[in-house]
Amino acid sequence: MNQTYKYAINCDLKQCFDMLNHDKLMYLFERHIQDKAISKFIRRGLQVGTVDLSGEVTER
Image 1 (cartoon, rainbow, N blue to C red):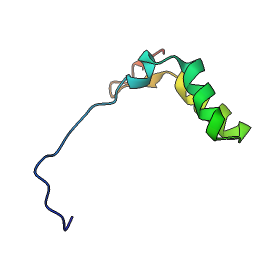
Image 2: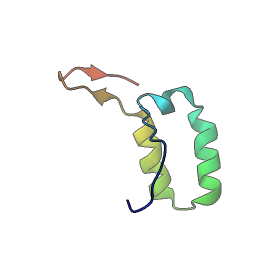
Image 3: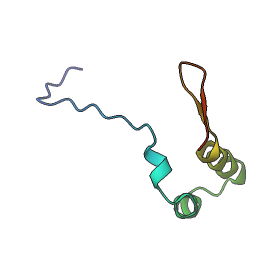
């Protein structure tokens, strides 16, 4: 906050992870994080659908 910046970048990460190979992503993740519970949690998060503001469910 005390530093001055010339640029601000806004990006929308919606559906960012849909385009990635989840198996490869998890392989790289698990090379650094050995906790199986965390890996399982992350994998489920990648596979879950979403609910938008209108209440409509979108499958992954």
